[in-house]
Length: 124
Image (tube, rainbow, N blue to C red; front, side, top):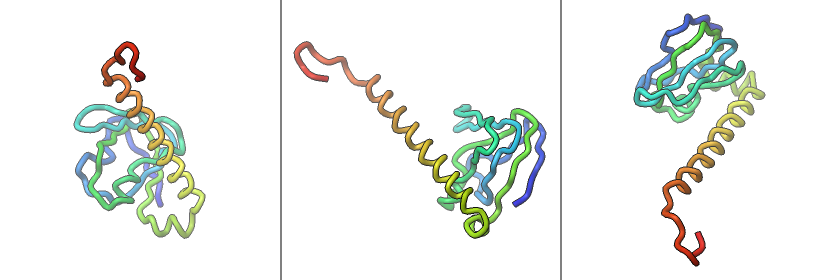
């Protein structure tokens, strides 16, 4: 693990890049985009990103760039993390579960919005 200070506007990784590390935001802010569309901002210290591609062994699924001067903790080896920082693994699992729950809720909202209106006398 090492710490990096990164200026605003710098790309941390781009969609399609090979995965090699995961990151924890210490201070600052980053923007996540998919297919050129901003989808999230990460501003809370302790937030982790870049874990999906590292865990799946796949290319990066999003682009992440700093939107403010930022300090990051860079984790290069997941096996070392398992051996030395098990509490951080719980944080990663919790964050992934929270994201999955949020996506489930968004899916349900979108599905309801796309459903045709119920006919009179028919349950929805």
